[in-house]
Amino acid sequence: MNGKLRNKWTKRLFPFFALVLLLLPWSTAYAVDDNAAASQELIRIEVAELPEAPSYTVFGRALGGVSNPQDLFYIDATDNPADMVATLYLINTQKLINYYSYLILHVGVYVERQGEWEKATGSDGKPLSDIIISLRNGQASFTLPGLAKYKVTIDSGGFYSPSVRNADPESLSPQFYLEVR
Image (tube, rainbow, N blue to C red; front, side, top):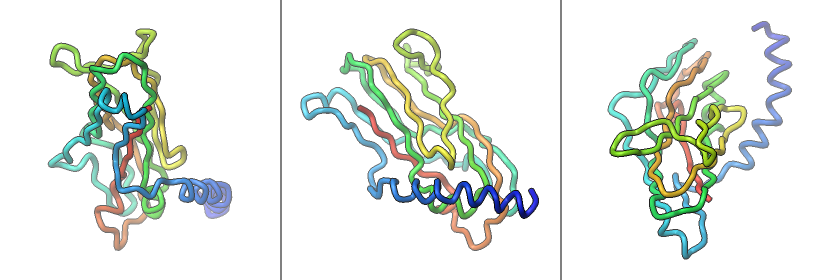
């Protein structure tokens, strides 16, 4: 990308990134069940364990993708008959924008049926639309039917990192927050 075009995009995207940074939650929690007190016991959210191997490797001028799907959260709504709206947030964009020109991640949602995980469907029985989270949108929402167990994952994605000089691994790894209403 030539310098004029890059400068043009930087001028257009900077206000958006500034707005995202101002609106990001500064909480240390990674999962929230935002239902009324009486129904809080009906939905449980659990953060998945970190994988032994990273989902992708980043180095200077790296153009790559997610090599290993990664579980993020488990949602247990087996006692909740109502539909739920889940919103997944990318909460450390302020660090990531220093190292990535773009980061686009495909979110997977799976339901547990008879001990096996399969792609989740909406209340209408149709598969969920593709769920994408990126540095640009920073969040993704989806509706899930109640009375089931779900897992939210990062299935695939792509990135370009022009420079990672002096970056600690924490600065290169996306961090997520899940809210369920």
